[in-house]
Image 1 (spheres, helix red, strand yellow):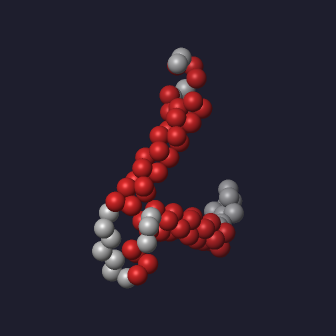
Image 2: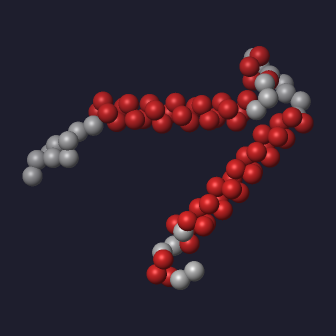
Length: 82
């Protein structure tokens, strides 16, 4: 890869490779959950893949909350004047 194209992490092929690699790692980790014996504290946390879907839902909620807070507290670009 030449230097004129920028950093190696921003190339399309590297980004695609990282997505594939991370997806495989995540799938393997969720599949390994089938071989673990859960010790749930409450009923729902003993379900298959609980950590994966709980983490995903939590992340989505935080992003949506951040967007809502951004809309509520956003100031115009010229808030402090010129």
